[in-house]
Image (cartoon, rainbow, N blue to C red):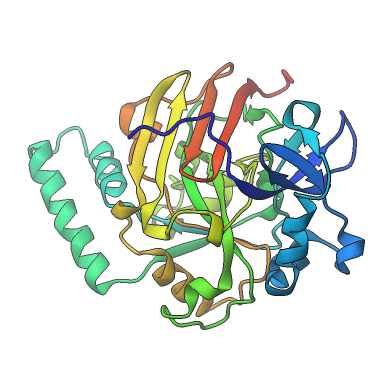
Length: 325
């Protein structure tokens, strides 16, 4: 069943502004209205503290959404619902996506039929899922913005690509946790569009070095996020999410988390083996098939992306040329 871009989460945490230039305020989305959240009254300094102390604060936070009339969504501007200290990204984690990208990178003189290549890569992915480990790299927290900001396309490339992703929001600090305990450390979920400059990912001057994720993924605003942070208890199970991204009204990505090579518990367990993940941090789970690279289509000024994940709402991002805001 296709996702409905207009469906809101039943309950979520948000950050919002009441007008241009106003400071972002934490809030609760309940019954389609935004209710300001008084952090001082909760005895915390930030939403990261709310995520960490959710077990003791949940009842009070939910009561906030029932105790006041709230604000209409049209009367506020939603921004990124999280302020992570760390952003940990997962690469090559959707089976079909990896196959599509590898086929897209086939040499022009490769004599093999495309279907033969797809089958060979598929076997490699199945072997990796059975016996391999997830692939992680770090992003920069300052790239996390709300969809209230236009996406500025850097002038140094015309190969900006979209990657709609499910992102886990850390609740309890996670360090060397088991797969069995992993979900207990996740507070909930949000939507990420992990923008990528495709021709900056591989260094032509130093091919032996491999991928250059700093240049490929960390331009300003390259991680439109939210606009909602939804607790696990109010969202589908990790294996039941459906993701859909439309570009100018045409569906480009439409897939489910059933296509993940490594599921969410495996990702969190693997990521936490090296680095303690902190409350409010984001763990990206990878992007499904349907990116521009495989289609020979890249973002251009005026493009509008609409990305939805079941139970998490919708984000809408407009692309503009650098210097044209």
